[in-house]
Image 1 (cartoon, rainbow, N blue to C red):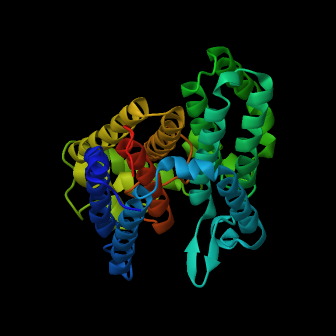
Image 2: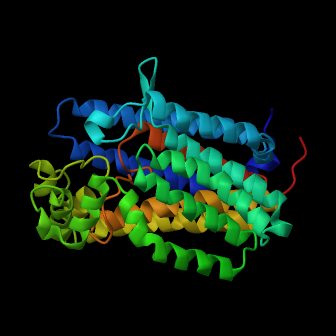
Length: 368
């Protein structure tokens, strides 16, 4: 399928440019975070390759009208569920991380939940757009909760609480755009708070410990609270301009665990300080604001809901990761979009950006 000039003209190049800048920024910081690790060059090469592959995938996505993906939402949903079931059966990772989140095919490893959540967003956006006139009827809401609840439950069973929490965020974000009444949002919030004590019993031991040390880090400062304690030290010591690139004490001397993945923000804060963090946050703000504009300018409701779902997902990941690293949320193990090391996470986020750019490019009807 050929892309015409008038379609490309509508493309939001600001979003694309910001994503590339954030990704390059991430690669630079990964090079610092892994400089004292064995095969440090491999981390950089993998992340760079993932970024390039992601940009290629974005280009391919642009050749198809985003509505095409919506037309196949049942197939996309079924495939997403199949991936999540498969990882529960033959997934690996439990011995190292306490959760079976990885599938390996021909030596290539990936986390199905990263791709599945994109598929669920597409499926929900299509279903909600087709039933928006009855969005406040219990029958419709029940179906939507089932569509979102099944994959959410499967992800929780891995167990992966961090990814589980993103499902209600983008689901209610999309429902809100479709016209869900405030009373339902309020009722859900009240029910969630009331059920919190009961939900405690369904958490795994390590999840309960993370919450306990979040409330009181002194309970286990050298154990479960070690990560967050070292992260807070790193963030606080960066001050205005940081200790300098590749000069962080917590990161370079090995005190900060997972410094190139979940806690990359701590490395940025320690080495580049408030200035470096502000630059990164500014780029994220531009990305999210432009995404909201894309949602508002979409030519149809499906595009608007899909864009909001994508932006809600990205916003949650950004918020949760930063709050986690500065000690304002329990450790959830969620990486920072386009910055944290991880090929699967990078590629899935690039797919999300490809869909967002697709919507922006077709905000006006284009004849092919």
